[in-house]
Length: 111
Image (tube, rainbow, N blue to C red):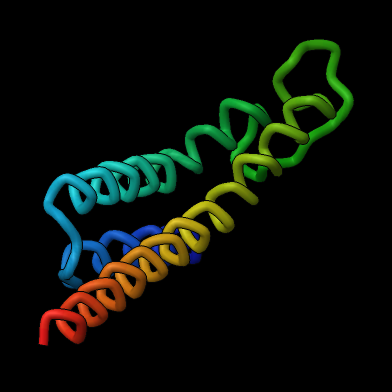
């Protein structure tokens, strides 16, 4: 749980405190990072609802709660909460560098 929150907070703080992008683009990144923060805050609740217990142990149950399909969804959500913030921050940093390099090339051409 702590790693999920750390990654999500890192994405959010990176977007808030770095500049160089148009305000509309920054707003989109902020919304995406807030969605990550909400998902990470609710990860324990989602895990409890899928597993039916606080240990997140999945067993072969006759219903959906706690069975293999619920376990599959739990692991997909857990992996997504790790991979998606990293992917977003990679795209954001690339976006910032591309815009800065375009601005530098425009300044060189104008001079």
